[in-house]
Image 1 (cartoon, rainbow over the protein chains, first blue to last red):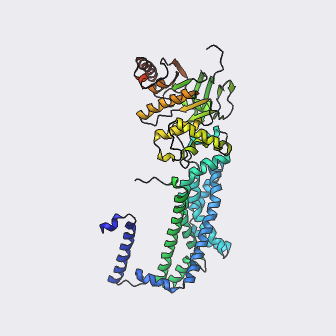
Image 2: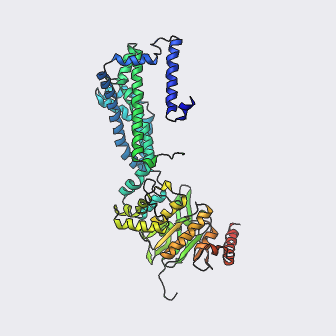
Length: 256
Length: 259
């Protein structure tokens, strides 16, 4: 046991393995029916309920909506953050609006958006966008304003154009903030896509879970849930890897 | 002085009032002074007396509310890049290596860096004792080394005037003294007009030709001393009797004001 915990990489694996074992054993010992809580091995059989190609279709439907919404949010958030960080007037005018949008429960607006925008990906992308957008704007704006004032003075004394102040000082300085926003929002994007599918969809993991539960096929609903977690983790890791690869200086220092 | 020389830097009855959220703040009132070419002047004063405002006026980042600021006889009417600024914190770009940080002003000003600028940068890094560290990131350097990079960066465009805003105040006492002497070596090898802001009496006395003492807000000069110490200065200078007497004189003046 000590030998396993000695390796840092094995520590979280040990936790999850322990949970799975306890889970499996308790379903046997307490004879929990699989529609309440299926054992992990039972969930594995849930994956067989649907053909592999159908799984891919569901995954792609969810992933597509999540990524389109996420990318749209990034594309709109960055210029907006630049404007917000540069102009007090614009910031005063727009910030309350952003807060109102953020305070509106997206789950409650989702049915309305679907009615207005009809079927297809568009309403689902909008819903995902609404969920991912705010953390991005806030983190980017905070980052753009986190530049040391000395460097801005240096920039002014060099009479550099504003575009260069942005590209060579402000945006690079905002990178750590931008990435924390990107990491929060990528997991939110999956939530957005699933919420949208709950309201109206004919494909996607969220749709699949809802469909399965309405027929009491709980193990395969759990299988879908596992997939969602996996996708979320994977996307998060991709963003982390991009930051580590291209902006290693923006990561907090290791203690060792 | 044999010839009526144009001062490198001249403040003529400068007043500075800032509008703040809590009303107007008078930072400077009736500030007048002259600094000759290649003179090393220390500005000594209590915190919050408007010392940094002097630097920002000289570099043209702000315009005086009243009076005028002249650099080599010409009115300062906007940001100028012939003054180099060394800040209290090194404020280097964390993503750029040491050499890229030193050439940053030229990249930022013109959008490109020519090989001769890199050569100048490496030369400056040699001068500040950072040869071999060109490709390191700022986070890999100690505070003193980072500030050396800051000094090299300020000297890249070979400014006539070097403005230093308490540049060594964040360093430990030993490094601070060492950096002071290094600065003197650089200044001796490549003479510049230096305005050195500090609140350390011994630092002002040890480094400068002249010490200007500022009052609390609204800041103005209450004393102007020639430093009675020969050059070149060294660790030995700091143990001399004249040094102690001069420092005591400055101290009693500042303490009297504070009382």
